[in-house]
Image 1 (tube, rainbow, N blue to C red):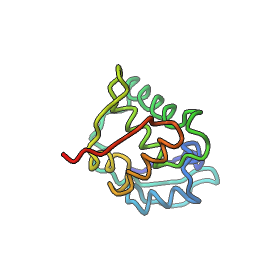
Image 2: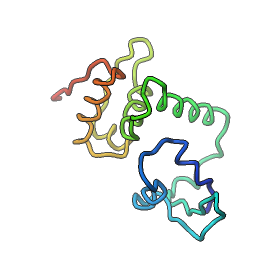
Image 3: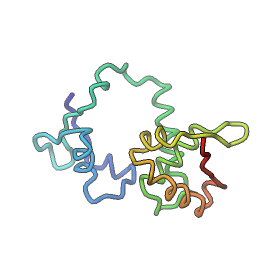
Image 4: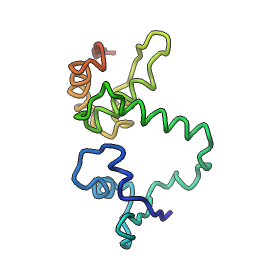
Length: 141
């Protein structure tokens, strides 16, 4: 699937890389195609599952809006990078709504956040230091 995307799209997601489009291309999520206009990028989306998905309905749009707002909350501060945003979002989305606590499998969480499980402890420590997470611990089982 080819798409014309505004160049500012990834900047609005506050990705802290000099060229986030190249990062997505390196991760094999898309292939940058022929040059678009000065304000757009032409890309071929490489996610095979994308073509089998139904068009975004109001529920999906609301979920995406919530996710962006949760990941860029004012309490997160402007210096929080993409991994911390995704980790915070993952924990928020998977927490018990009544208690705010939850369990997360490191492999699943790392996959959802686009990182290696070995990087999660540092991200969780940073979230705790910023007051976005009260505490965390790893269970052996």
